[in-house]
Amino acid sequence: MPNNLVFIVFHLTLGKLYTNSMLAMLNGRRKLRENLEGQMINTGTIIIAPQDETRDTGDIMLRSEVSFPDSSDTKVSADSLGRTSEDRMSLTLRLPALLTAAAFRYGSYNPGLTIRIILCVLSVPATGFVRSLASSWSAKRNAARLGAVLPPVVRGKWPGNLDTAVGLVKSMNRDYVMQYMNDLFEEYSTKTLNTRILWDDQIWTIDEGNVKFMLTGPGFEWFHKGYWWQERLESFLGNGIFNRDKEEWQAHRQIARPWFTRDRISDLGLFDRHAADTIDIMINHARDQRAFDAQDLLARFTLDSASEFLFGNCLHTLQKALPVAGKAKLGPKGSAIDDEFGTFAWAFEDTQVKIARRTRIGRMWPLFEMFGEAYADSNAIVHNWLKPLVEQALKEKDEAARLGRKDEDRTFLSHLADNVDDPESIRFQVLNMLLAGRDTVRAFFAHIYDIAQRRCRQRLH
Image (cartoon, rainbow, N blue to C red; front, side):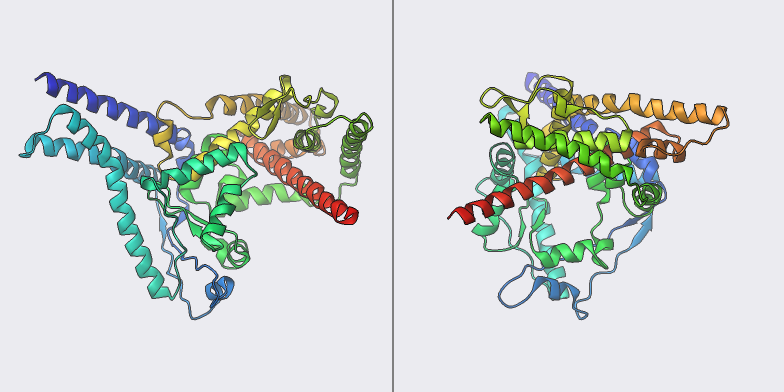
C-alpha cells in the first residue's frame, strides 16, 4: 500500500511537470488560435535532396519529372487547431507513462517501486524512438516515390542525439554563430543535414540551390513558418509579420509597404548622423589606443537608427558609456552593461538566444521548460519598454481625430497607429521591424568589417 501511494504521488508529480511544460508551450496560444481562425493550413511536405557528385540539388528539386506531393489545404477552426496540437503533445508526453502504469496495474509483471518509476520515465523517450523509426520509414518511401535522396542523418552518441543538442547550445555561448553546424557539415561532407534531435527531423542546409528554391518561386509556398514555428515565438513576436504566413503575412505587408516605399530624403540624414557618431567613436578609440567591442558599438548604431526611424524617439545609446575592455561582463551576444540601454539590449538578445534554443531542441522543447517559460523575464522587459511608445502614438491619433486634424505620418509607429487600433498588434509589429532592422544592419556591417580586415592583411603580405 505505501508503495502504491508513492507511485500515485509520482504520477501526480509527473503529470504536474508535464502540465507546466504544456503551459510554457501554450502561453499565448489563445491569441494564436484567434489569429489563425479559418485560415488555410498547408499540410504538404517536401523532400530535400542533398547535392553530390552526380546531381545538383537545385536541378533535382526543380526538374519537371520530380512530382512533389500534393498539399491538402484544410480549413480548420480555432478550437480544433488548438486541440490537435495539444493532443499531439499530450500523447507524446503523458500517454506513454500512463500506459506503462496501467500495464503494471493490470498485467502480470509487478516490479518494485524504483523499477516502475524508471520504466515510466523511460517510456517517453522510448515512444519518441518508435515514432522516429516510423517517420524515417515513411520519409524513405516518399523519397523513393519522388526519385529524391534523403539528407544524411547525424549519428549522435546519446539517445535522441542529445549530445548534438548540447553541442549546439554550447556553441552559441562560446563559438562563432553556427560554428558547430559548420563542423557537422564538414564531418558528413554534405551541404544538407538532418540533426534529428529528440527523434524529430530537423533539416539544415547551406546549399544555394535549396535556399534559392525555398525563398523564390514555387518553393516559397512550400516552406512557410507553420504552426509549430509560430508557437515557439508567439509570446515574443506575437502576430507580427515574421511570425505569420499567407493571408495575415500579406496583410502585414500591405500595411507596411506604403511607409517603406516612400521617397523619404530626410531619412538619409538620420542614418548619416548616427553613422558619423559611430565612426567618431572608432577614431577616438584608435587614437587613444583603446579597444572597443565592435559588436556592442554596431548594436548601438542600429538601435539608435532603428528607434528614431521607427518611433521618432532616438535612444541615444551612442552617447552613453561603452563597456570597458577587460572589465565588462559578457551578455548573450557581446558585452553587457548596467544602464537602461544595457538592460533592454540584454533582454532583447537573451530572448532571441533562448528562442533559438527552442528551435534547436525541436517540438519537445516544453520538456526543457517545465518550470516556466525560459525567457519570461527578458520578454517582459522588452514589451514593457515598447508599451508607453505605443500608447503615446494612439493618444496622438485620438487627439488628432478629436480636433479634426489629419497629421502626416512622421514615423512607422504613427503609420501603424493610423491603420491599426489594437495596441498589442501594433507593439508586436513594431517589435518585428525593430528585430529585423537591428539584426540585418548589424550583420551587414559586421561582415563588412571582416571583409575589410582580410583585404588589409592581404595587402600587407
